[in-house]
Image (cartoon, rainbow, N blue to C red; front, top):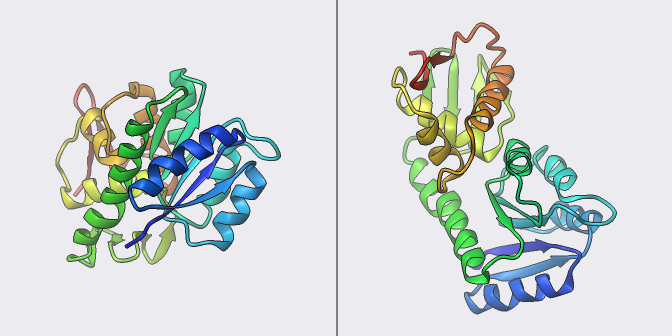
Length: 227
């Protein structure tokens, strides 16, 4: 399958660099020079993965990501010259799957794109062998990558989906923050504990889990889904 990659960056040199390396590896590349153009492409073209620069004119990359996550859970890599942990956490919290800091090694960038494509589409296909997982009143439809609670569908980012898949495949098992990060973002552990706490808090909010009846904090160890 020829995967279609959107590169959204206001620097033409960056777009051309991605295009050069990606097309060499057989990917098809779409380009956007600003956020509104990126959003239009995402709405009208079959994009398999998006690389979004944060600082774009018209609409910044984080706003594009927020809009995209209203209707799609395709892999997204945030691209920015900002390297502070808070910026990484914000991008991941909004639903990004990975983060690249400028300047970057183009070979590493392509490797990250390939890794996210493989995990989301190739490895994700294996998950479809089990069409649904049920724990209490939660049902995870692995064919549609959808979580339902008493029949109510809960919108998840791709990272949140993978975390819930980890929990629901192993109800009652305690997972460390590093294990949760690895499952959710499929990368080297680089986020601080606060980032994981924010993600778990958002999942609890979506589950109406104010009293932690679903996702239990195990002090000093990590988290588990109550069986």
